[in-house]
Length: 491
Image (cartoon, rainbow, N blue to C red; front, side, top):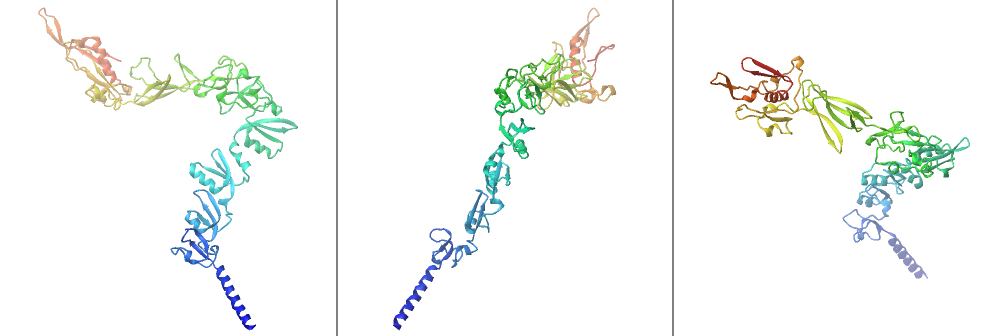
């Protein structure tokens, strides 16, 4: 009997030691065979010796494999119960909060441009970086349905509500209508509808009145409640559908045209020269309905009609393309039906140039590059438009004309304060003198015959020299012939 008891005791002790040995596990930072991280293994030999020494405990109790929250800003995820080592390997940020109960991982409404979705702040930032769009995160919105309506808060429609026991309406945005619902529970928003829509059953009806709207250029119908309706179209004044839903400008009458002075269409286009203005008798065509019209913004100057926004050049002299002493360049502008002007420069140091593209004129005041014209001695350098504003003048000569007759002069002659002697032809690179020596021979009968440079005595040559003289500035031409003959040609 005693032997049996001793044997049974030994057997029980061995069994208990086996059970204890079977329950011991080791936390491997990395498993040697599979490469898995933070696994509980039954033998420390299964752990990769290149990493932390295996500890005879569960991984949750180690510093390197403790479970927490892994926040990955690259893919926008928040992973619960993630080992620190696993999080580090994925280049995430590990925090000691296994359930990810943090601000970064709480759900809210992420607004990206015109898109909204219900997710975490971390995911919202991730998409913002990915698409290069600024984000707005609303943590006060706690459900997806409310979040999805956020991008459409600015859409317009009919906001129907009760006022003094009457069902009335206001054209507004969804946001403003939602704000009204906070103080009045009986508020409904109908996107894209007009208050005059019969299906809404409000006290707002269609009319034949029109109005101008601040910040817009078109003429609009108004309903009986004073709400702005669609663009004025005389053919739609009694059209039920036209008074039911909001119609875009592009789908309204006369789209693509200015519709200036139209009595039937109010689809004005400011860039094409019209805008909404109250009708004026004697100035505008009479609108078929209402008291507003697309006012013509063009201008008439010296009998020529200019479009709204056009600019053009003019001078204070009636002599075309001739820069006479005292003449000045102006840049004129047609704006909102009125002509305004800008003086380029008092002494033509700036000139006005204009171009025309698709029959639309555009003018600019630019610097007059005349200063080194006189220094040029050949036509190519003289007329190099990238360097200077000059022209090459060549006079007409006869067979016996031996005078140098080619000159480089300003294309737009500069001006000076000649009335104060502030600037003369002598100051701009020339002595102001053009000399022509005419030779004569005494005839057998005692008379004189011209034999050289005879053209200098002709009016045509003198006028050509006057052109040279006036081209270099506000100068005066003096012509002398013989000992006593002298005359001046003043441009």
